[in-house]
Amino acid sequence: MLSGSSAAEARLSRIAPEAAGEIHHVVREAFVYGFDGVMILCLIVSIVGALGALLVSETASQSDRGDEGEPENPRQ
Image 1 (cartoon, rainbow, N blue to C red):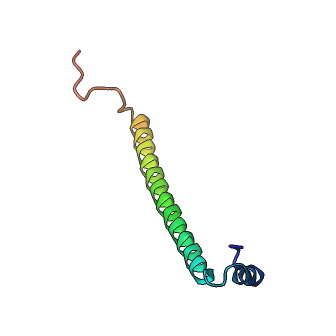
Image 2 (image 1 turned 30 degrees about the vertical axis):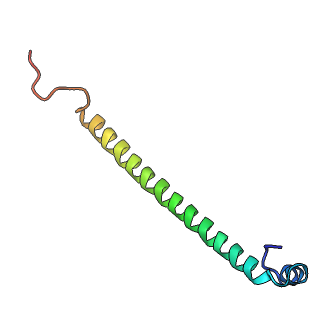
Image 3 (image 1 turned 90 degrees about the vertical axis):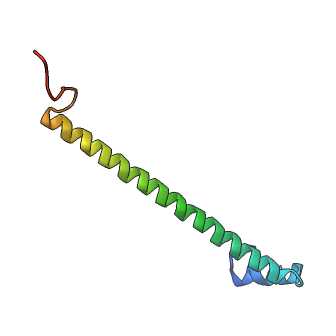
């Protein structure tokens, strides 16, 4: 009934004609709310992934130069 097809809307109008408009509004709002939530989740995952890639890249760069684990002024 929530698919948005004309048959589903007609059936909804037959079952509860006085509430059809309100149900239609609630379904649209629920979709928009859910879509907004998923977009925010995707944004957060993207930011975390980009930060992780930068950290891994920096670690790999330091490892290639030999900077990892060595003090700057070693005492001998």
